[in-house]
Image 1 (tube, rainbow, N blue to C red):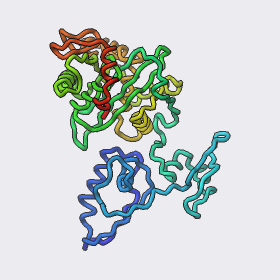
Image 2: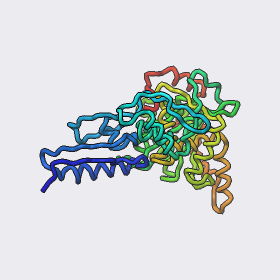
Image 3: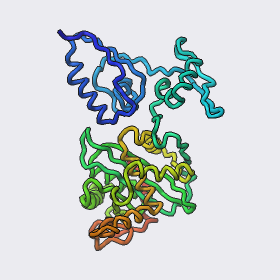
Length: 386
């Protein structure tokens, strides 16, 4: 006997990682739905609580739309209040405006919910605000921001990559962060990217944004892959020249690396260090036209509640580099026996490399000023993060 009707209720949890979402979809599409009759009717019901969950995909609100239940009719998501406005008074949140979606849950009922389980939880459960992660490390941070034209002269710009070692639907994401520091020690977050791709493509992207922003170095967290990333960096530089993406005389940024175990602590401890700078207003997000700042803010908001955490980690390494914390971590590791400090900093050896750059063998370098003029004046090359 096969069922001719199924009700799917509350399949998503806010804390589901992408791997768990994929596992649920696999079970649903390969085991549960195929068990139904040819005229199977499916009713799926849940509040929208996960930006990449099953229901976000069914509703067409995720970057990864569902390819199952293709003939579905979608209703919602419907927030409890349309145009809700909140105020904080004496440590208590009040809803002061908003039109109820249905009569059975008016504004007074919504206020009781807020009083019972808090404004953040209400926004997630009843307003479908999937960008709020209750209990996240950066949940309460008010990010400073500015437009690119207001960014002051930067003393130093760096790019850092938190990589994965494979490219499959089950792989970890790669995270790329570009940061610069001004003379007053304020850090400006210039560009952020996160996604699943190959290790070589990840470094190609990082090198392109490094050249675009005239960064002095490209760094990689090498907990996975170790010294292999030096070879991948060299190959990425060569491939960019060979396919004409950059000119043959391009002077490539210096390669650097760091290991999470070299005095930097676990992920939450690392993220907590830059959190203090956010709380002091010493980090500014640059509102770029590609909206990459929104990618970073989404990654920070969900940390450590939901994976992936790669962009948050990449943002730590770029912050640590500009704050001078990388050398401190390397020195801490150097206090143990048989550690080569130069190897820990992982500078690519090359007879043609200056202190801050690595060049393809036989290719003369160009000045940073010439490189900036060439890249910034060549929009036909395409946005390096794409």
